[in-house]
Length: 146
Image 1 (cartoon, rainbow, N blue to C red):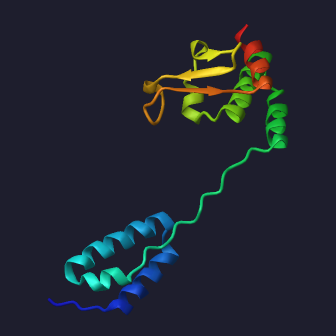
Image 2 (cartoon, rainbow, N blue to C red; image 1 turned 180 degrees about the horizontal axis):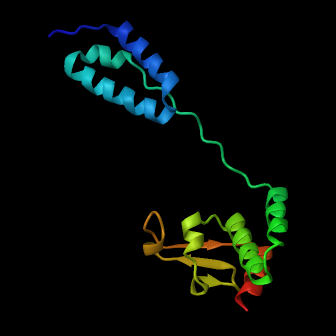
């Protein structure tokens, strides 16, 4: 069998994909299309531009949202409330990932210097890391550790 297509057909196909796929997935599809075209016709492959990925907006936790979360936790028992409050405050101020926060032990936290040591075996990027947390989080962590 013999199939034929031209640059216009490829562009129409890519535009259809734009409506169906996420930007990152679309980009990987276009990379694959260009890779295939380089074997057939390198000049045509060069005419197909890679779609730009949208800039990722930084997620900002608003102070009011964190306060609301903590006030909702007040309905829990005292020990659960203190634990959750400390976790919320540390998560909001330290930059730890959720699974890193979940795997914290009291040995990882230095309350007096407000630091958290994460060994390479417990991080996503397999690198040792020290992170800091706020004074308010220190108060929550201190009450929890007693």
